[in-house]
Amino acid sequence: MTDTLQDYRKYLQPDVVAKLANMELVARLVVEGFITGLHKSPYHGFSVEFAEHRQYMPGDEIKHLDWKIYGKTDRYYVKQFEEETNLKSYIILDSSRSMSYASNGRMTKLEYASYITAALAQLMVQQRDAVGFTIYDERVRLYMPPHATKTYLKEILRQLESLTGSNKTSTADSLHTIAERIKRRGLVIILSDLFDKPDEVMAALRHFRHKKNEVIVMQILDPMERSFAFGRDAVFKDLETSEEMTTQPWHIQKAYKQEMKKFLDTYKKECREHNIDYVLLDTSTPFDNALFEFLHKRQRMG
Image (tube, rainbow, N blue to C red; front, side):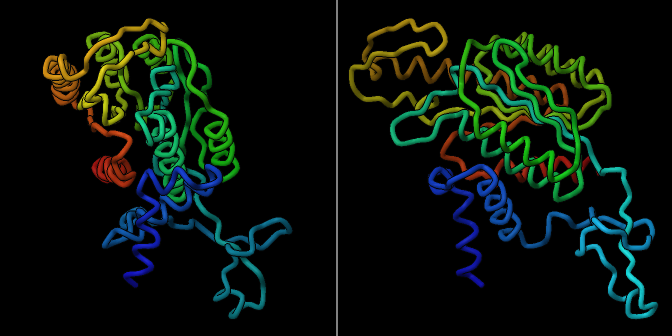
């Protein structure tokens, strides 16, 4: 049992997942690793109840056949599940060029965020939640409204596999646009480095709250963006403007870390004051941290 647990839990580590072949495999293995690692099923309290039975028809999935009824009646019936899903979720992913950054040996912030998105979408569909998916940079590039089918999940994963970081960012403007497009309230999950003006971003996040949505903000950074521990002369290039600056990182490390702490504390404080869940992740953080945040929020909403 312990070996099996370790086999699945390893897929929660970013360096292991980075070696996998495709997004569908990533999504399945990360979720399996997450579920295996829990002491109790994350579906506790969210079991899907079927409303009625109906006679089997060609094209119905065999797995939904009720063999107990067949044993009693000698006829094939399938469980008719209720159409209504438990929750509508909207995953919003920042694909701006700054998300393409990675320090030596690590995956990019965009890759990390994409894997979290894939795992969340997989987990939601398994729970019969409807999941929507949006990509933005300086404007909204893709908007997929929530659905709860495996076919829809495959399309989300296909979009993630072909995703690359491009263009400048306009997080605040894009989030306002998305907030206006959401007609049915639900759970909004935003994955971004939030490299934009915090006051403008917070105004956009409050827009979601004003429309009665629950919100989780996952701020994703590279470990080096937090520590600035480069240790030697370096040339820094702005990924969005291509401006370059040569400096001695050790010389400005203390001041940088103070400014970074102030930047992060602003988001943390503002989110707390407006009932927005905030979680800080970096690209070395195991994926189950993000999945726990979703699950905890979902149970509170339930």
